[in-house]
Image (cartoon, rainbow, N blue to C red; front, side, top):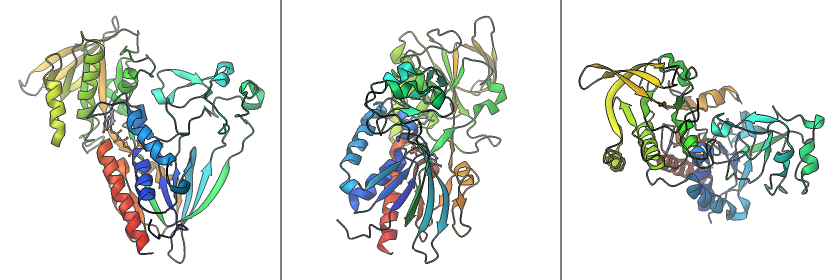
Length: 432
Ligand SMILES: Cc1cc2nc3c(=O)[nH]c(=O)nc-3n(C[C@H](O)[C@H](O)[C@H](O)COP(=O)(O)OP(=O)(O)OC[C@H]3O[C@@H](n4cnc5c(N)ncnc54)[C@H](O)[C@@H]3O)c2cc1C
């Protein structure tokens, strides 16, 4: 163990794969306290919402379980989680030794006595849209936010719970795990370093009016497709289209839905080609009679991911069309979608009928929106580029970034960037 000063903890904002990886890398290397502040009531980020992740196509829980085991064995509880929490203020210490941060944690209505028995949800009369499944189904107002959450417990949606007008869940809980009178708390910390690991959100593809998302029920996004394929998703893993729950065989995947477009996301989101190849394979695995078609401008599968493209191409039922989809309309009688495509190889305009369309929505970094909600001391330098990614590490100030806050990255590269941020923290601390 190094002799680093444990009075100068590290703050990590965002508890997705990148934030968790950075916390583990720091605490496994040196005796240092790390606080992870996570907006949601559980950690794990968007990776938990995948059915499987490339390149190995294992369920997200595999990697997540390894990480939660590492967290549980972390030295002297050096990793502290503040879930359902946001940073409200960051102020620089006058003597240059770090930052004072103010964190607001929502009321913790459920304590650690929760055994996830589910008796509370059985008596809850209120429904809410299930954001974990991108609103494709509902849960009760008291609910398990994801299948394998950490911390493993139920949570309460304040926008739907009727609190003192109901309280049925409190009476149903045999373990005294629910307190609907819980209050929010303010936590103040002094930290030496900050890592932003705030991740991404899918691009708002309804802005691409020609592609019909939000207008036609059977036009969905790639993140929704992950949940449709997932055994714990809204259709229990059957790929059924939203309008009539029909099992689909003829699905069109449309690449660069927003990405590489000056009016939307000018950059390549880097993972969408791999994600659509993966999802075409889901469809082939789940519905053997299926025949997906991928409409692309360029297929980008760099490095060893070329093998993954070869795998998809070797399945003759997966079709590839180098073409731009200019417009989607709906056949109202059947719910099918009619695509106007400019075939780039033949130069011809073609029509294509699909039972469902999956838009490869790009990844938009959260950090710019997040920073606008934090009151930050004017002296603190955080460089954001024109696309909203953090582009300059502040080595002297001890402010770093990891994962998709920094660049559009896959899980592997997010982990690598987290290791890099962890090393920067250790180096910065060695100079304090
Ligand atoms: C359709 C699709 C499929 C994909 N499939 C794969 C795949 O198969 N394999 C692969 O390698 N990669 C895949 N990816 C990429 C993968 O999702 C990312 O690499 C990964 O999510 C990056 O993790 P992260 O921790 O940087 O971000 P996130 O997963 O977004 O986690 C960020 C966390 O920070 C929290 N947060 C945000 N703002 C705040 C705030 N202000 N305060 C507190 N907390 C905050 C969020 O709630 C979240 O928990 C896919 C991406 C898409 C779009």
